[in-house]
Image (cartoon, rainbow, N blue to C red; front, side, top):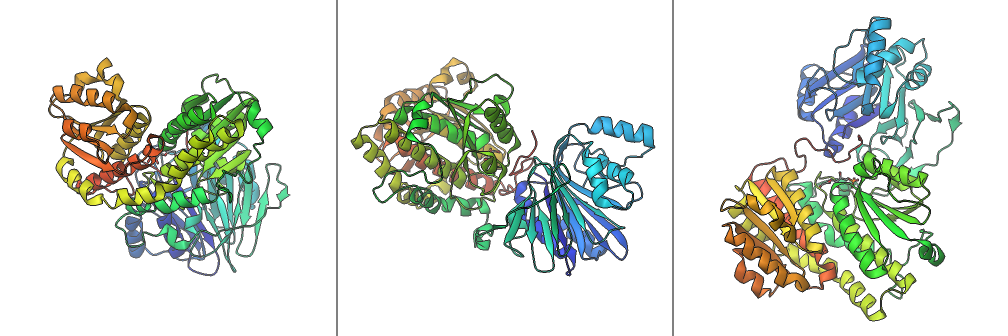
Amino acid sequence: MCGIAGYIGEEQAREIIIDGLKRLEYRGYDSAGVAIAGDKGLQIRKAVGRIENLEKLMAEEPVSGNLGIGHTRWATHGEPTKVNAHPHTNEDGTIAVVHNGIIENYAELRTWLKDEHGVTFKSETDTEVIAHLIGLMYKGDLLEAVFEAVSKLSGAYAIGVVCADEPDRIVAVRNDAPLIVGLGENCNFLASDIPAMLKYCRSIYFIENCETVLITKDEVTIFNAKREKVKRDIYHVTMDADAAEKGGHDHFMIKEIYEQPQGILKTIERRLDENGRVKLDGIKLTRKELSDIERVYIVACGTAYHAGLIGKYAIERFAGIPVEVDIASEFRYRNPFVNAKTLFICISQSGETLDTLMALREAKKKGARVLSIVNVVGSSVARESDDVFYTWAGPEIAVASTKAFTTQMVCLYLLALYMAAENGTLEEGQFTRVMDELKRTPELIREVLSRENAIKKIAKRIYKNENVFFIGRGLDASIAFEGALKLKEISYIHAFAIAAGELKHGTIALLDMDTLVITLASQTALNDKIVSNIKEVKARGAEVISLAKDGAVKIADESDDVIYIPECIDEVAPILAIVPLQLLAYHIAKLRGCDIDKPKNLAKSVTVE
Ligand code: F6R
């Protein structure tokens, strides 16, 4: 969601900024722009749509200079037009601002700037308010002006500012939206995320909330809210630069689907000791603390929330502790039973989802201990949690989450098994049975992936359907939700998921011969019940494609087609069952000609509430 890339150094800024913006494309955007400071003052170029449109414009109307900021905008205030695209400037065009986030008091500020200072606004954005505010405060010192201006802002934001009269500096501020500074040789970088600068530098500073940073070619100075200089440790990025490339695949999504076995293996290996027991190195959850926990709260959004539903099952079943799962954007606005005896688990791939971050802060205020399951090292959620359980999935670039989901489920299983071992709630035989099977999941997923052609065939048959239902029971109900989300977000097909037993309480009214029902039947213990559901659906004329384990004869007899996954215990079946649904969504979207890695209206990292 909105990307910021900035550069100051000895090279032409335009190429480096455009390259950085391209590496942030995964965040989602609908327009892009740059402000380059050079001999000709500030040169602003903006274009609607893809970055290629901006590049075309820059070829027709070239810019030059060794300092600049760039932006990809995901529209919030005002349509995705050229006028609304960032950067925005003050009235005389000497100060340019890019911004990620939402300024909540922008309407009051806009009125004040108009009425009291006669400011004329060009765009409908909240961002333009920042540019005018800085312009108003500017008395020859950009840093001072930014300090003054941000003291008037409320909301969540990361901003980058350049000034024609001070072409040797970028000033940036962070408040609840990600911002990092990269340290190069005779140059420095600004960005929303690491991939934007991975090609140029590996040493970075994470900018914290309410911090302002002054970036020159040779120096980076960070200030806290009281305008005092703060010292920050350098973080050395170890991420493989290739990990953020497609590596011969058509899309990041399919590459990431195929990376699941290795991601899971890494996630498991890092958490097992030489005796095959779960070790929570770096996580200070002692036996005593565990025995004090009365309730677990899992909070997340979207796909991560679906992993949470599986986590509820695992923790309740193995560790015998009651678990509540909540959508982060809802959690804050209730009065949840969270206190010092609550273990609050946040799940987030990006670690920057604002809804999740706000829920985390709310839980901390209430005294809960916060453990997060996060993929991005050093992200906001990770830094604000008491403990972090990293998923070692590697960078997930495609908007549709795949490998983060399977590794999140694996983390939750490991955590549940750890709790069970500490609490003595699972017999040794049961522990070994689940752990052994969990260790086998990378190999089982490889087997699922080897069956991609069968899924492609089904995709070909059904890709024109406009209405798909996903049903399942128990763990399969949660996978139904995730399967439907994958399909709708990348193929734009209407997909609806419901617990199979709930169908008859209303939703079945929608079924007829034009409906396709994907039935998840990976839970052998519930097979008889799901067969009855298939019969109900078939009786309404709907077509049924089931997902079942090898040899599930009864399911095959009742269904029009079956997607098979290898035999495994029911407890770990969700980790396998989602993979064919990811592949199915991918191939359907491909056949429909959709922009798979960058679906419309979506952003990878949702940094607004
Ligand atoms: C769907 C998807 C989203 C995210 C959600 C939370 O494929 O990716 O539903 O799961 O926006 O994002 P994170 O996990 O980064 O907090």
